[in-house]
Length: 569
Ligand code: HEM
Image (cartoon, rainbow, N blue to C red; front, side, top):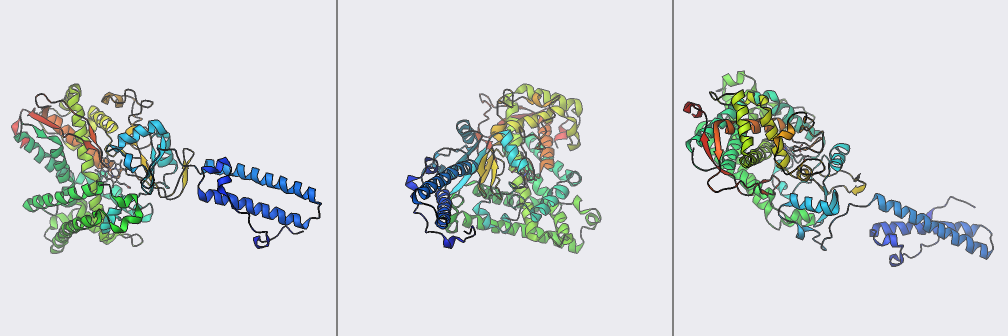
């Protein structure tokens, strides 16, 4: 008797009738059922083959065969049970054939996901066309995704529209985890947005903030749209930092307006639901024409960038900025700084011209709407709680006084204002579902299987409002972040509070966001008292987007509070 035999020596396989399968298998996938039966087949064929070689009488043969079959089925059942447990997906709402749950999505996706979590639990699945989505809504599960499996989830599911631009896939947000992403992230966090570089670019931020204050002063007593002013200021600050040392005067203003138009159209297109993302096999048809539209915008964007880069290179060649050149390049602007890095880069992972454009784009897309919407939410909450405005102004008067303007270096001396910022980012984390993550391999979270390539949403918005973590979670109460509450920093170490994300793919611009938020809010509250127009109530309703915003823009009336009018000039 030989125990060694290739399967070609075995009897033919038994036919598989899945309709008579064990109850346990009825809900299993076809692949699993056929794998299960093929294993049983092989075992039965092996046993029969072995029994052929042993000289036994017929009843004994039947008995042994039956007990062998029984053992095989028993083994199969145990095997199937363990497989089912380990390969099961999270629960989730039932969907329709083909489109899955797409038809039942509500416009405010973050609050809709929070509602679904109450029925289906802290981890659930959604079928989004042919794509599987997984939503995570608890600190412990968020920690599994962003800490325990940090590297696996340090990738993105890139929207199809980004193929319209060369640099749409070469930026920090989109690049998959690996040496190229590490190089870009290092350039961004350790160089462009380091404290030293940000300090050297302070004059550019200060210039833009002062321009805004002058504008608001000229409209004292009239209602102004705070969000518009904030967006314009942040946009000017960010573009100033990009190339403010290269383009000056009227050129800068006209270029700013042109650039802002293109960016606004681009972000709108990026937020638009696209059939190609739900049914990747249809992507090549670009049914909604999104990629085509984006190509047009990308060309305009490209022209603006080319113009800037050309100008910058000419400036350097002609040596007309000798004074600036003799200082360190970081004192000028990001563009000059990146072009210099490009020439000096590491040959193994070089910084290409495409990367330079992609990084500039990251600053604009990642840094503008996020920061301005965050400050607008804080102002709206303050309008609802006048005592918070009074306390913040009292702190500003004590630390800065009324005879000078706020400077960025003052922001570390304002703990109450800092608590306002944290509380506002708790109630309104402007990226409520972070930027969706995508696992590079199949793994297990909360005991469920998360297949490679799915889209994972971490609902930080819902976690920040979880009553088991936060006392009176819907109350805007900056005091909760004062005295002894320092455990809630936003470094991402505590997954009960992480408005900037956590782990490797957390926000690359925290240092800049913090400075801009604090400096803008401090300046607005120091320079003006604010009132709502007669009969208006503050409205904190949110409108979902990758970046959330107020559904109804905040319109308020400023009244100057500094005695010296020259300070507003
Ligand atoms: C209040 C303002 C801001 C908030 C609340 C915020 C929040 C976030 C969040 C939640 C993420 C995604 C984290 C994740 O997916 O796990 C992110 C990513 C990112 N943010 Fe911010 N952000 C802000 C401002 C900024 C600014 C000012 C910049 C740059 C100038 C910036 C640049 C980026 C970049 C480049 C990424 C992608 C990081 C990566 O994928 O490696 N952000 N931000």
